[in-house]
Length: 143
Image 1 (cartoon, helix red, strand yellow):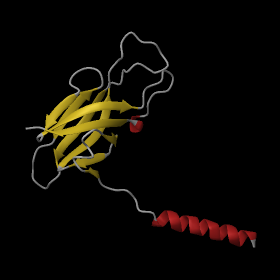
Image 2 (cartoon, helix red, strand yellow; image 1 turned 90 degrees about the vertical axis):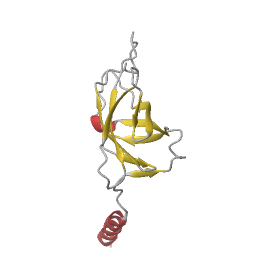
Image 3 (cartoon, helix red, strand yellow; image 1 turned 180 degrees about the horizontal axis):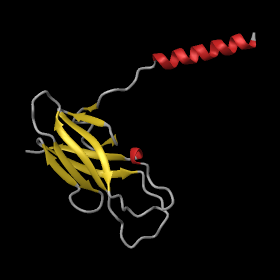
Image 4 (cartoon, helix red, strand yellow; image 1 turned 30 degrees about the horizontal axis):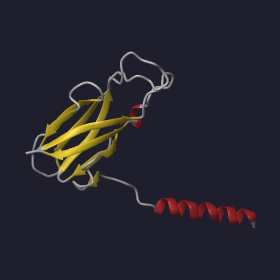
């Protein structure tokens, strides 16, 4: 009897997992939602009113670890691909934005993309895995 209940519980759990929808494709925001900031993870794409922003990678993360006293705050470079969300053959722009140095914002397809914050903060003994980065961005229509 116990083995039947266990088998039933396993089957129901597997069925529940199989029926849960997988998240695919970009995360879509309205301009009002993106007015302050939106979060994007490495490898993830967001779409704000026809602009597609993909977080490619973090280069050169030399930010001061939170458990150390540093003379300089350090800097990290966030690499983004920005393109129109359409089938038109418009070029993709690559922006390299910095946490401390300039530029902290860049223009592409009529929008200014601001790097507001990069998480997680580094620790001295534990490097940040490349896939754990999250960038907070602000997109503002220009012109």
